[in-house]
Length: 462
Image 1 (cartoon, rainbow, N blue to C red):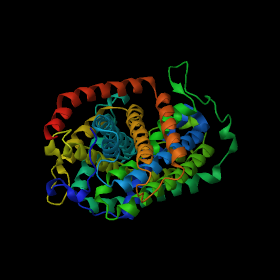
Image 2: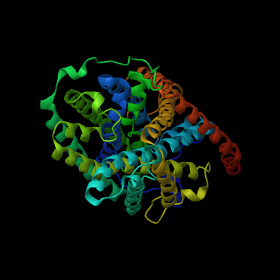
Image 3: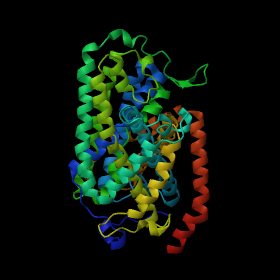
Image 4: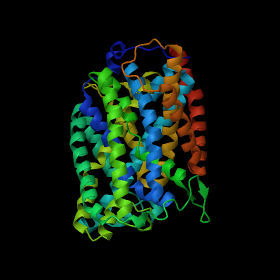
């Protein structure tokens, strides 16, 4: 069963979101979501898997995401409703596909928020230990010998409080913090670029291109790195979930999605080249704060403290963007009856307060206990499915209704669409085997939930 398309103004008032966002808000939301843990933290994880060829991993992941971003921009301007990929799947493919996309997006957004909170904690913990004497065991999860990651839980609670103030207000604060974050990355490049050494790029590809299992049981290679680095690029899909709250979706959604993606690809490549040229990758591989570590190793402690402080201040923009997107996915699924409809009720100010609070409980629990690399890999699995689905939806609609008016038309759709699909499938294959298994288990749980609750509820409402 496919869901008929209906505009937002046809939705009952108690389930309707207020349109308060313009393209600068969306651009800041996208850049805030994309530039974060991926470059500030995961560059170390990616380098450990690919060496200097992590730059190639950035380019591959960025190219695949760019193709998916074009599909998102076309679909979002045609169907400006909350829910993003979930909503497109429901309208174009059907309820069963929509459920799996929505279920995967719940996993993606929950894990992204948790992963970024853990990454934020990696920068905040040294500052808290040195400045306030907070014991490290209260700032690390069990995988690092600690008890619970309290800073990660704390930042999630701060962001939920900000979001509860209001959508426009939180978007404005987000825009200011994005400026702080970009300034910190610019300082990093300016400080380390004069110390660039070409020999740090030799050998360029020490672990090969395709995913291979090392003697230590760790999967390495450029594609293994790209499958993790992929985490660094998505975030523009959070803009699609804001479609219903955009004042001029026909114009602003495409600007926000495509514009933020192009800006972030340029930033990532510049930072990665500067980092790898300044220091041998072995010295910052797998570090929870690789850029700050590089500055300290180069004898720039003040710049390192500035970067760490900026990350502590600005990384919450990523938490905010994905927390926002997660609550909108919950909201859309609840409004359709696939989840309890009570979660779709909005406050007097037009905000889905219940979904935000429900999401806060889930993500803070994950962030307090699980390690960053495992969270990021599993989050990527859900995102890859969503990107594939949106690209398929774009191509299906092009085939079924080629005459339909498209406010933004993805260029070379029959090339970029298949590239996004094939690229995402290859990245999924390149994920760790355990991640693929966990993703399968998550979706088996989803099958059970759908047939026990979701399908029955939508059948009742017709």
